[in-house]
Image (cartoon, rainbow, N blue to C red; front, side, top):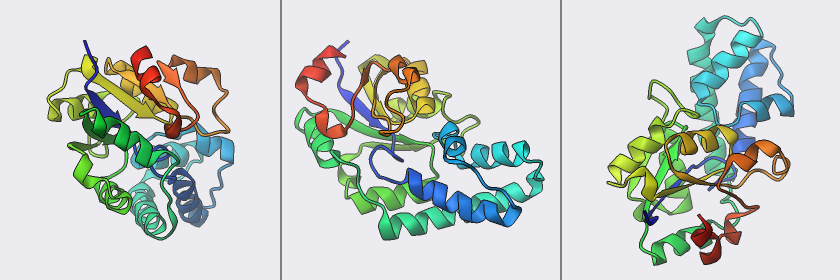
Length: 218
């Protein structure tokens, strides 16, 4: 079946927000005497914030009664940081123009809460080009479960076989493949060489590098 739909992840793919999530988490976790290494942050990239907080609280014997407050504080900090200093990822304009010119339906499927998605979409100026926006924040399961991608495809009235997804994280890659969709992964430079990303249909170093030839290989 011919591809006619593209679904984008958001954090770390369209906007350089992953470091801001780490900054915000570090500021909040410090209140609980918790400090994570870069490797620890990287290991949970792509998780929803609720799962992220509960995971690290559990690993460090911090009571889960504090989790909801910590989650809200991290989200509020990330929203502030995104508004003040987040930047679009390289190739953002190119990739949207590429699929708009080919009349693809365009969706966004993110683990982030809607409050942050709205800030990012407006900051990047892409709202008018997106036909469906889906958040996994309040679903029973987040990525790597495929539900947020399946919901987005339903809203776009597309079958999984018609969809290509763009992701930067391994959890997102697994979610897209579990949904039965093609997946192009654009890992962070420090992660790019890891064999786990070979599970994608295609790996590129930047959205700017995507072209017709690569589309036809999918």
